[in-house]
Image 1 (tube, rainbow, N blue to C red):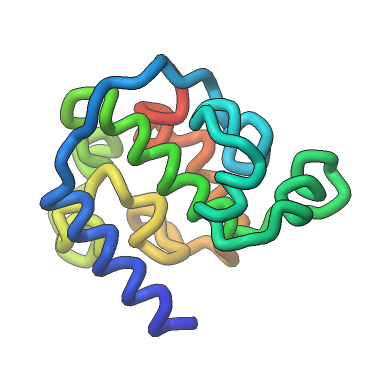
Image 2 (tube, helix red, strand yellow):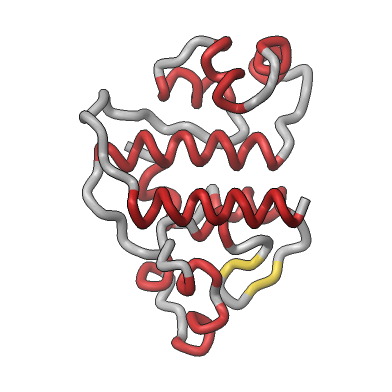
Length: 157
């Protein structure tokens, strides 16, 4: 799992540093990472298209949308990447997390988001860390991220 995380991190680093914005799309409404239907609608995708993008079955998307299954943090993270990339096309450069959170230089030096110059991807690349806090799980981290002004820059329209 650590290898997959590292590979995903490198891919995202490339997207953050070298990604090119695409054509502007319609404004995205509020979408929480634990609401797959809202995410799908924000992306204007069918269940089949979203399933393909998330590397899961259509049945699984249907189960998430109907509340029969909890959405694991891994799927929430991938959905967050999709939302972020869509939102990034619509907005100008987002303010980095270390500026928004006013992180002390000593905290910045240890921060993976700062090291990667990915301050708008802190919610994904910092593991269970948030600034100088260590959270007990990815689920707890994603819950905290949902309330953070860094992710609210692109989660809310």
